[in-house]
Image (cartoon, rainbow, N blue to C red; front, side, top):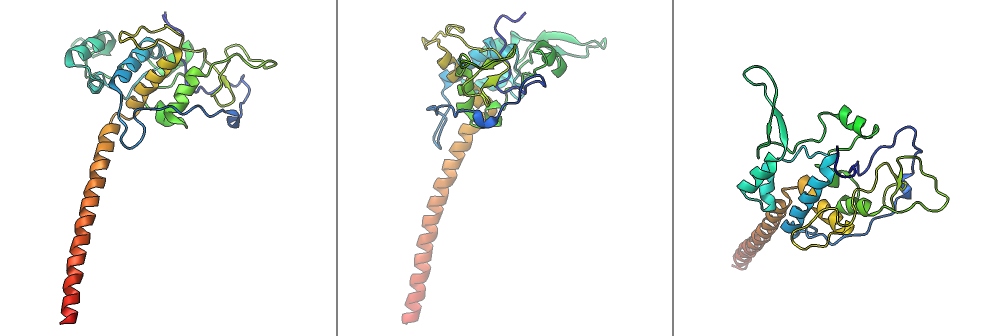
Length: 258
């Protein structure tokens, strides 16, 4: 039994019974001041750890992170013992054993994040036919990226007067067409933070979006650092070439005068 509301797809393809919605009806979500934005941007480790907490307590009830391994959490600031503890809280099916049987065991750092469902059919059956997508690349797969994911998470409102929604539909300001087939996954006080950070819907959305951005692009900081080094190298190399050019042409001019 799920202990939290279903954290369904951030964008779920509506079933045939639902009316088609025009993508042009979407409202552009507000731009957020992400620490990872820009050429010098970096991930906020505290935000990443809080985002992992929100993911584990809310999102993981329905969504997997099949491209992320527990050992990758070292990048969030966790040590080996902490990672082993986190991984061991999940059950992984392994095998076959010497008897040829599959068996369950506690998770290990070398395991991928455990999926909430054994297969796609089971996931759809548990969610009235809607498949909750894997979130490993969600911030790269959706136009608007992190801003859009945050916007959808905080964009739930009462439907405008005169608007009729079918059972299982909800009004979201930033969803294309404004109609989404999932309940609002976040509420104030839902996840307890130990560092004193406000436990609000907006903060939860910021933190879990931060975490999902890291999950989609864990190498971002290294890529940016390498890019800066390459640019600096090219600038120095260009300056050296300029000096060489001046020296060569200075010698040519001297020879012509001679």
